[in-house]
Image (cartoon, rainbow, N blue to C red; front, top):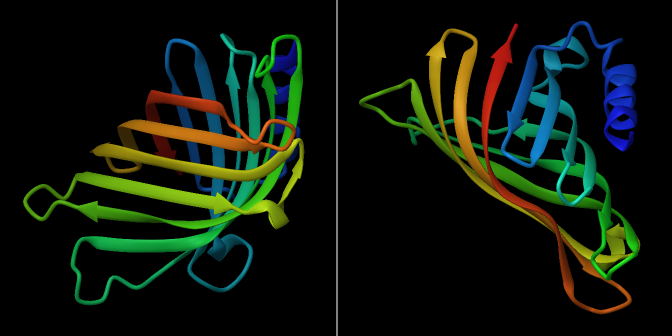
Length: 194
């Protein structure tokens, strides 16, 4: 039931964005994630991307919604390397961190992504992302937030990438002072650009 609500909200918000240019779907044995993004050319002048995503873990019943913007830097002298910086809003629920409880967490996180396209094989690229939010930008039951991941992607055809990615999202819990992991897993995904 919770998963249906998340998907309904995701589709309701993203359906007016017919000008969006990418859909990303990733999954593993216990979780599924969707992300919809658009380049700045559809909305504003500039070199930035806007995205909206949801994640649902059927095993732990944890879920996460995120929205954000990344501004891409110029490649410059470092051929094959690109850097993007930006901000995200994360809103999630962590079930059973303490048995029988639900932690409602939210944060504004800042960070970036670093991508590298291998010179010998331009279709293959590796990526790293890291975002963090201190106490002042976290809300609900959270006192801090962090999100990071590593990926390896292959462009199977123009507009279609397949990838393997490890990602982790965690929040510091105010009541205990400890870190609760909302999600940490390896995902297989496909990114479709249109």
